[in-house]
Image (cartoon, rainbow, N blue to C red):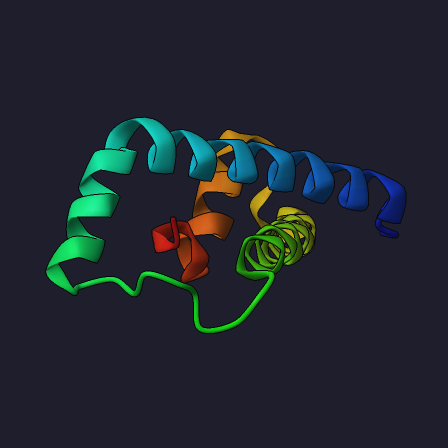
Length: 100
């Protein structure tokens, strides 16, 4: 059985977009800027980042992980069958769901 690479990449890019949006929502509305500023003031977080373009690297990394997870689901779908149950099993077998 051959895999539809276009659909895998489309699913990975869609998953990456959702993951980036989720990361933004968590950072902006759950963690909030006030808590982040308080952590910076107390010395837990640095006032400036250690390296430039961290946000861009973070977004690229989320897309790469989402595409890898889409491939993992496509490969495991042949044995587990289609559906949300096999998608959940594929995502739980990877360590990235614990990744924000």
